[in-house]
Image 1 (spheres, rainbow, N blue to C red):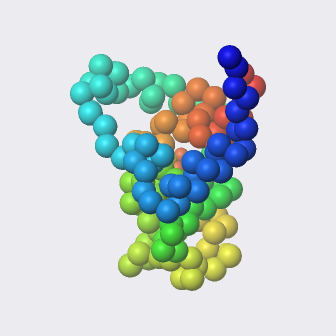
Image 2 (tube, rainbow, N blue to C red; image 1 turned 60 degrees about the horizontal axis):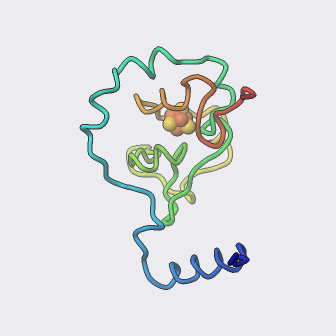
Amino acid sequence: MEVALNIESAVTSRYSEAAQAREADLCCAVAYDPQYFDVIPAEILVNSFNLASVAGLMCRSTLNIGWRGEVYDCDFNQMLNLQWRNGKPLFLWDTKPEDVQNRPILTGDHCFGCTAGAGSSCGGAILPA
Ligand code: SF4
């Protein structure tokens, strides 16, 4: 017997419940076992750098704002706690529109994940599959 699923209703119900009480299964993983990365040669991402992906990186056109108003260049940087600083952590109310234009972007090794191949994340994939 086939049962029709009302997807909108099911999703609304699921997330409504999670809004009332934390549900671990709905959250992104915040911990991982680093042994699984040992088998990946470190140079894989570095050697996959694609200059063409840089123009579409989300950090070049968006900001990420934490729930307390912290300002980050992107969600990756937020997860790594790379908050904007100017002698102290900066919040949205500490910044002006002109601060956003031509700002230096906090980068690190994790940025090779965005610039590999055709890019990744919401702003990095600029090349057609
Ligand atoms: S991880 Fe690095 S390259 Fe990717 S969006 Fe953030 S700052 Fe930009």
